[in-house]
Picture (cartoon, rainbow, N blue to C red):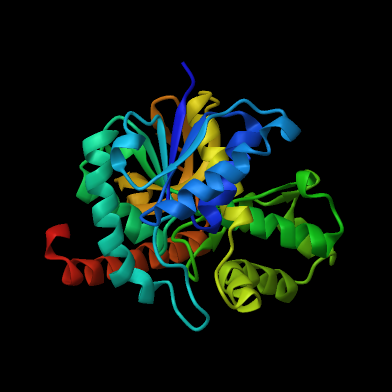
Length: 319
């Protein structure tokens, strides 16, 4: 039996996800969008590339949740993307309403799915989604850490003139300005980044600038595009999570997950390294943080809490 992935939202990320999933032959794809024509048009366009690319995947578009039923994986990108000058938090009110409808649709049609959320403001939206849907916490995760890590590794590779596959790193915490780059765990060709700084290969100031550019990675792209936000890298990151779940790869990936005491944090979604396998989030990896990293992680969690408090004011049902 072929697996089934439903993509909720057929915008730029949704369409790119559908294309990547088809190229990998990962699963049949249902593109869902309230604008049914958009979902149907993109599905048909990608399907027509199958003879060229040699994939054998069913693609369809719909605006009816019934067509998505019994999905193995659901990836949610529905929502309004950021516009220039808009913060992730401005999006909160608009996207909470959308996520509530999505949660109801999923609960009725695919209660056993592994659900990946990409909609911003990420950490709060994924938390709201879990509360609205009542799905198990280990099956509802947010995609942010893979994207932030990927951006950070890319910027480092450009700066140090080293291929991306020779760099290991990841980020913790919320998605956005409070993310924590794990410099203590960052290695370039097997060498700790802190050693490279000591050797003078990279100045502390330059490293700080790269971290800052990573935090604002999304906003930089929004500024260039003028209409819309990043979609290629976010889609690639979402597919990596889906693939680890469907193929039981047990990859260690930084994702926004529900913490229940780990990292001295309770009842909040935040980005940490986890193992994703066929049971969803199978393990949360607890790292030893440096005092600096711990302080920054706490700050990050506090900002997610503050934003979730704002969400509760918008919709008391989240209490």
